[in-house]
Length: 498
Image (cartoon, rainbow, N blue to C red; front, side, top):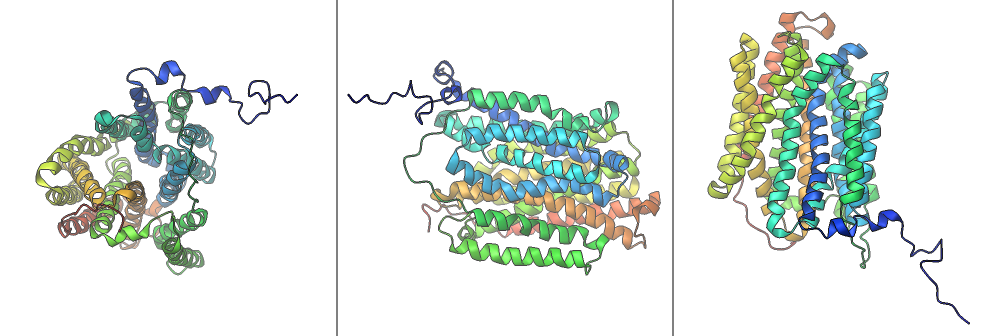
């Protein structure tokens, strides 16, 4: 007599479910307001990733002394993290779409914890940079998923509020980073800026497993993942950034610089050719036929490059020229994200009433004036002008970003909104990477124009002149973004993919 298979008695049955497959528990997921548990869990990751991005720059001068390396070398601690984020945030977003978000988010927390711990115990700068790559992989898993998880779990009536809360968590993380970093540096040492991530990350991992909604089972065939596009994108970005970043110190025609240039250029050509032929590309380049999307992403890169070059140069200037303690420098650098946090929600409200152009132009004008104020402050060493400059840089970016992002998304075909949002994320991270590069290269060039090719031999006056002129260059980048924003065409809503 034939006995039907039983899912409860076959230990190796494919239908057998583990404890984790039953999470979140019915008592949790059926509870009224369950989606706010999801939002809270995602906000932990958003806060932690933003805190880590803003806390690191204030620690770079101290880490430079600890590892006994040049300013250009220690900049790679920040740049390695940002480049990894830029290279992975779109591929991981696509992988989450295909394979599921819940476990990728929980695994991302775990990877971030391990990377943070390894950063904290790193005995050399090379090991530190390797650990930063691991840390950035975890952060990319978190950032690529956060808004999508909230969108899927939250009813339409609460969705705008939920996404706004997630954005506020990022803003708070960015704002507190310099102050927390300065306090840690002044008390228990720079390694603890990484160790503090471990307990928070453990809590986030557990909450992610216990509370995040299960991924829906897919009945339709999964779209193929563009693995070759992801493989080509990473060395392309690294090659281009390395060529620009190290050209001044290594020599523009040195063998390693030429190799980096060739890898970057050939990789870019190959990536474009591959993506144009793919049916499901990693990066849908056809979106760039819409001027609003193209110009919006270019100005997005330039805006974050201008801001991030200030957040890189600022701590070194305050440490070396102004001779401030780390906690004092942290409090001053906190002004930039505070300005950004104040004006971001205001800008979103004003954009609905007055349109994007006036706010994006005004935002970049404010950032440009901030660069000019920092140029004047570094020349006169006056605190009021320094505070004004830092606040203008942050508030300018706060005014610029929401309407710029909205104009890009409004120009996107409806069935490409996810891809367009991923491109915006990559543009922001790439802008941060270029900002670190811009700040470091500007400083090195301004030293070399004074005949100084080794910063350890520079006098206080010579360093101040270099910072003085480098701040002016960051303002010039914002000026370019301002003119491009002014030239934007009025966005037209595109109904479906063309």
